[in-house]
Amino acid sequence: RISNETTAFANSHAGGLSNSRQAFSTANGVPGMPDDGLTYSWTPSACKPPLSVGVNNITKNAAQISWTQPAVVPNEGYDIYYSTS
Image 1 (tube, helix red, strand yellow):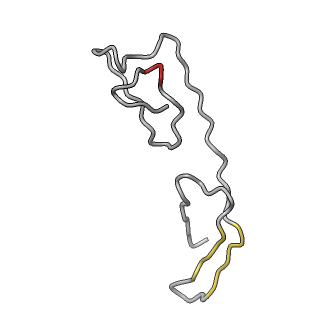
Image 2 (cartoon, helix red, strand yellow):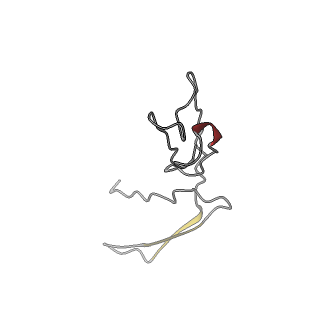
């Protein structure tokens, strides 16, 4: 959910990122607090893998890695993991 300090808690709207914020206050009527029993549900989007992964110019200490991004790119970008196995 997302809202600011001048929007009532009940008038928040869906956030689009993992760092979206919803304001609340126990002391002020606006933004206020949620009603008792309020439950939020969240389903993370499926991570789309990169397409056409390529590896070129492999040497003992380096390699050039390339890929084509899918039509829907992950909101948080990609994490790159490499290891010796």
